[in-house]
Length: 182
Image 1 (spheres, rainbow, N blue to C red):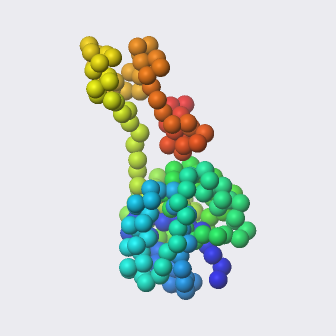
Image 2 (image 1 turned 180 degrees about the vertical axis):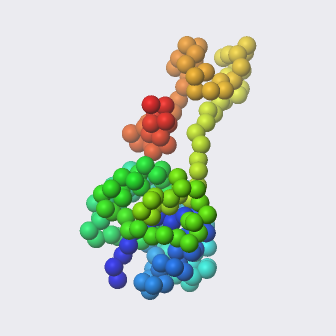
């Protein structure tokens, strides 16, 4: 059975994929590379199996690791679905020819920015980045200051050495933050 790599739309599209994509190929076992949290992956794959009877095996890892794996395996894909991650990574994998185009019937109701024009990927959630503040520590260190309300507020010299974020080389969320700021 030739395996295909597809991005699916929303949790419900994972299920619809089973009806429209997998059954045509008589999938015995769905293999998923998952970038999203383990709990969400487990819930989605369990629901998929309940709805289709098709067992799912998944590998959970970081965005960079799984996207690079998908690209390196494009001649012989080892997964059927790449689930999660920022669209920029899926655009990269599509440019490398590592994704199979799939048009989910459910994607028709999504906004255009959530679906690749060639159907190589479909978004399933929209996330925002924000500022998290340790309120107790902030009140102790900056008793007369308001909480930062914008990215620009973080430029206040008083906050030097106080701002922490994940390494953008190791974290796709950290990378997206830097990309957004640039």
